Image (cartoon, rainbow, N blue to C red):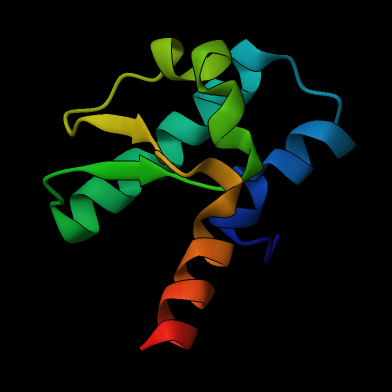
Length: 87
């Protein structure tokens, strides 16, 4: 079906479909491998609210590229807006 891979790997999909961390981590892994093949990134940063729970799923994600949770977690957008407003 026409569902977007990013949507299937979202935290919202995990909640709606009541997926356990292991099953959801597998979805995230498939999505990140696809991104690796398309973009060949040096680093993948997981942002948003799910970054606070990185310890529950990131150890189960096996990709070539280093993956880290965003340092500002879900506050990155707020920090970016404040930075832009102060310029």
